[in-house]
Length: 222
Ligand code: DC
Image (tube, rainbow, N blue to C red):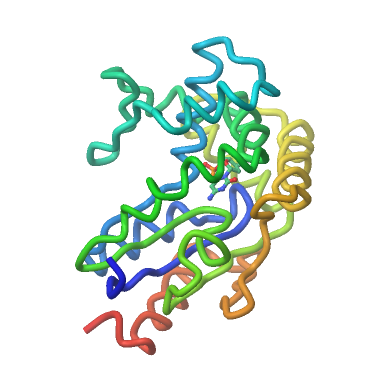
């Protein structure tokens, strides 16, 4: 796995990391690591098992044994398809809380590193470039204002027929940013060698083009 090309994409929620990661995965034929989905699956499991969110020993044990599998675009937890269940705002809030526990992060580290297989990996998360793959040749950090991200989330929910309150979503995003950026373990921040792209005034096609040019420059695409 040492010589496998890894592209890291980090940044706060709702900034377009998932869309960019999928785009680059299609373009390169690399594997995809959606590390947020691992934290969400852990959160889902914690709630299903009625674990207290400060019960570090039980959360660490669950993280070590986490019965989650990724099959194409589906997330399978103990043989049940939980793809849409882990995408709720409630699960996201629990994920952000359990993700702040250093023991939990350490328990998930090797599992994430194992995704780096030939021909390469597109790794989407918060600490991909800083902690999980610090030697990655291409590191991208996406950013955008909380308001812009909330608007995008509301639009996305509308397409799913879900009515959302923009003020509430903006507040949820701010709270999650605050927790993710201020935690001691692997806080959300760009790696020193990351290319930072502010997506506030860009459409997703522009973001994908910029990222793709970076991969060309680094010789990761032919
Ligand atoms: O990317 P996402 O919204 O699916 O992530 C859900 C939560 O998981 C997010 O609030 C922070 C946490 N997370 C993390 O701490 N580290 C990662 N590499 C990915 C996600």
